[in-house]
Image (cartoon, rainbow, N blue to C red; front, side, top):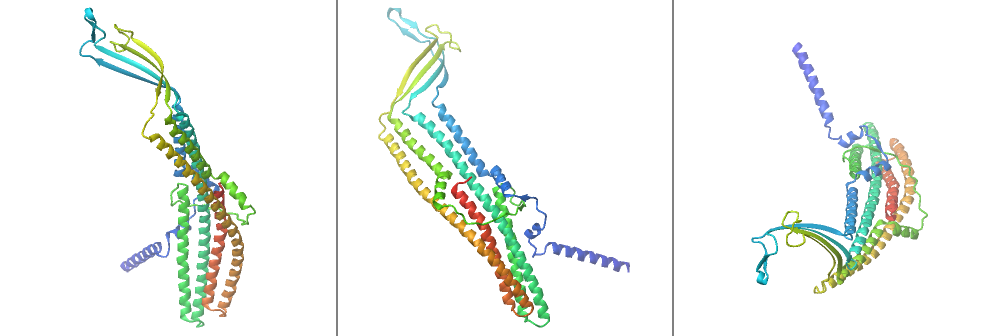
Length: 452
């Protein structure tokens, strides 16, 4: 009897363990659904997300480093205008002491066998055909260009964070709609089973309800996956762990059509967009590149100075044959006046580059106008669609309520009820897409206008 009890307890324990394992590994339970029921870490506001992205996004940090690089290049270009100092040291050990033959006097020594020479040289450019001053100005424009490129990266990042944040909220709303659809179809399946067992409907109606509920479950799991992917996209922009979980705050949205004039928006974009300003900087640099190429037509003049010590000791201070130290100041001119047309070719190259940038500027301005018009049109359309979709949701909910009552009284078919559920789900999703599409369109318009 004791052995039988022990075997029974062991069997019961094994059965509990098996059930626990089966529950933990139940194939219908997705990881996203299990994680969604766990308490999230914190509520993330849109402002916090933007600040995190601005602080951590690697490409924005890379743009800042490129700006620092341009600043150092500008310092180097400024240094080229200042005097340059250099020094050198040479030592020779001659095979014989140097001497000269001076008539009847014969061989006379004129130097030591050991020769130590120290030199200090100073060079101050006086005229370089405007090359150095132009290079300094170009370097300053490069700093401004990198600053504008960083500003452009900031605008892109802020827009991308906003869009990613809105898509998380939209994905969450879709998940709520999917769960409600599952609940509605589960209740419908329950009603169908009761009616079937009462002999009031055919078996295929019950099968149809079960299939619809299974399809709704698949849509819910897809919505959970889409929500996880939307979170990962925002985590990427904030340079966080892609699996980090958080809640997003509810957004107060009042979609309204804009009363702004399209022409005024065009002008604002042309004035504010950093891409336009950056391209203007490149145009100024291209003009200076022409000046740089033409600088080779002129001679280069420099003020030079030198001081040298020469002697038989290491310091070059002892010299028995001539003065041990010398100093000199003078002018040096260099002029390459013939290079087989190389300077002319470089000048034409710079002129062609300037013309290409002028054409690019015209194309970019047209592209900016198109982006503004597209974003403005999408914003207006989203505001109108939101009102239309909100009214459709009310109608779809009432249609589902009436159809559900009619089905329970066998005044409507199962197919009609399933169509009502599908219509309600589609209508709610359309409403949320229009609502948060309005926010996305507004973010796109702000980016197109170059607003901070």
